[in-house]
Image 1: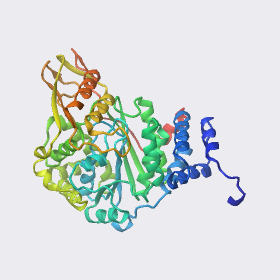
Image 2 (image 1 turned 45 degrees about the vertical axis):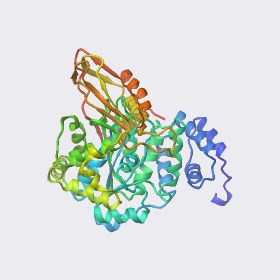
Image 3 (image 1 turned 180 degrees about the vertical axis):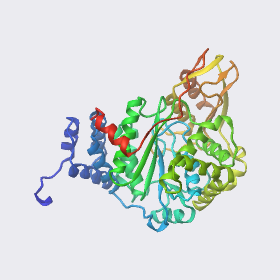
Image 4 (image 1 turned 120 degrees about the horizontal axis):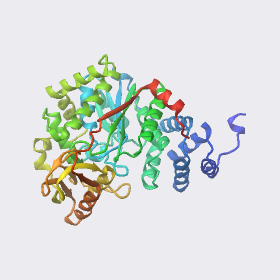
Length: 459
């Protein structure tokens, strides 16, 4: 049957079909992605379909089709002229998750091109773009040509989606945040990979969070998502690896916007504060895999060593500063990061008990950060670049009652109360130290991902 003789597609039929647990075919999924990109499908119908997909799940084949349809809904980045392997890193989102500002310049300093299309705050997690925009003048909204020019100059560029790049995801991403349909493996996979594949990648390193601060808090859900993303990307010839990493506490010491950039800047300058050691270690592991998949090291372990050299000798810092300048950011604020930090109100929260920090509800802590003014209630709202929380005690640390546990920076003094109350509910003390949790757990490559999916009982 030719396309001209096929019956017309009606969005309400697709909503009903997915609501009833049936799978959509390639033509139907292309219709949805095209309708989202063009605006021909009303937002209320897209929202209804997203909820049906969230409730019923997407099969691996539907996920692959949706990924490709969203990727092809707009233009794509041209990277062939760079003469280098293009590799990116993506995290599924966490609290204080700022590895992008380290791994991107680390990989670029080691000969890998890093075209990075990032997003804004989603749910309880912060947004890379919001953090970068805390640097005065930094432009995330480059044109496709501008993005390619910065890549050619610096070997790394971090930008937002342009209106021409993956427009279907731009619409669906914003809707998911407003319709409680974020935590869906298929939708997460398609959203992430459509943007990454449109950036002309040769390889991709995925940081899939597990634990109390992850979107998918169950270990088996995180494993399924990791395997699904690896298998989906590999099916379209993009070498991909996924690392399951711990999000049972904020990563590093800072969670917010400018304060996260400042923490990374300290590490890029070769400093090694104890409270940022997990951030440093994870960034080197992720960069090591990027360097390996980019053909600049024989193994990820060798890539780790190369990344650590780039951190120590300042070459990664130079890459970062060059990129910021190329995207019109004012690097003079890096001369005195603490002096530039200008929160509206500040309060130190003392420990209300003595003992070990035994457990953190990291999702709740993420909402505490958002309520300081660092996040947004509705899409398009401005965020406060200087709001956020610095955590002074890590999970497993012993602290005495009355000692500083966290410092809260908020937009106004009236906005301090809610984050403080959330912290008191989210952090628990015990007389015995908790069992340590490995920073990096299971690693999925193509072979192990495909094997996992063959035995996984998911829809």
